[in-house]
Length: 54
Ligand SMILES: [Zn+2]
Ligand SMILES: [Zn+2]
Image 1: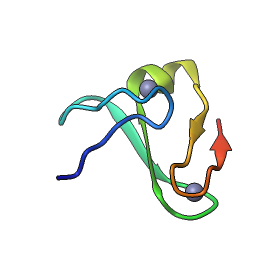
Image 2: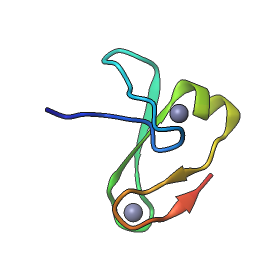
Image 3: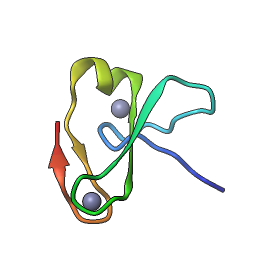
Image 4: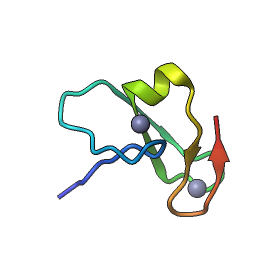
């Protein structure tokens, strides 16, 4: 299963929920942010390489 959770706050993201997906600029790992973290511009942390970005 592709278990998606927000890289900002850790909340699990349900299918169809508003979220943003993009690739880590450092390693290319998929980063997911929930709509809440998107609005608040919460920092994210890449699980793979530890990159932290806005
Ligand atoms: Zn979040
Ligand atoms: Zn990374």
